[in-house]
Length: 426
Image (cartoon, rainbow, N blue to C red; front, side, top):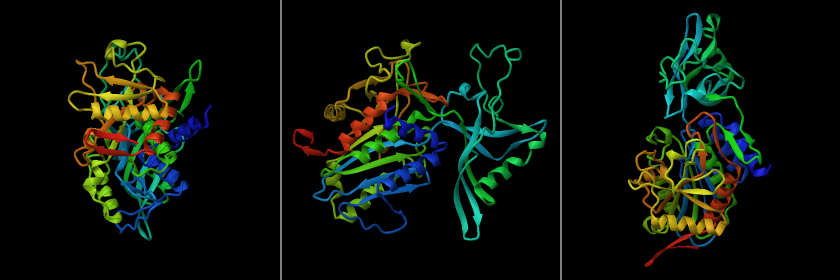
């Protein structure tokens, strides 16, 4: 197995919550020599400097300053969150059994969550002598499960049963004697009294490579941690150009990006302004020579249901990176950005596929059209082809993830120049 695939799988296994994903990416940047900036303090950016910041414990934004003349930003955006169940405050439900009260986060396939070991991870705020402190927690053992109803009692289970998240998907914690023990377990893991929490369920199954030729990769949260990791690796492997490379991993995409750490926030806009101010650059000139790649996974044609795909724009797993198009701009790709992205892929020696929704099946949106409202630059919406999107365990291709690393390294090693004829990628 390629060492790059092993590194991706290690990240996927460690990223048991959106907070753990951001923490792992921050540690990766630290090890690569990047300095953590505080949004609450003045920045003194230097040529050759490598920097990153974290907002909300979940959004990571990194950049580096070229040694020479600077001309534009080469940016990418992916996201760190995934559909899951959030644990409610006062989350225990007691009676003959002790259950967990949850609510859905994002649009999910619900059935795959049942009858498999689950646990709880996320962030808590703990009371300490120095004040309130943030702590990551992960109950690293098989803790809970959502049991199915037997077919004898639910004869509709195989006939299009509609799941009720207030009834059907409440996890079982233990018997009646388990009441009151969850909070004690969490406070033991956190090392203090919990004053606030952001806790989520996660599946215990690890990432795996499978298939006759070991060509498939399955894991929780491939949408969109696969793109987040490949973009990060490409960012770190890029060589210097005249552009400032910017890596964005936002949160909250699965619920509309409307948070202080989502793509709809001013995180990217304000960061670009601060970079320009610190370096004495004209922001408008910089943006006129900038580009964005919005990287969020794409639907591969399903082996059992090819009828759901547009026949001429149906990507296959391990067939190459996907350019995504939508006439109503749910995806931001147009002819210009598609041409530029294809030029980057040609430079990297990577194949490109295209995706469009079937005209009578509306699809989801992504980061690109949301971030454009704050940072208006040519944008290509791309992704890696995958199956079972928004399941708790998704499937994609081993080769596609490696290809995106190559594409992003080539992208971050180039620059975009505005000219009377359009744009030139060099």
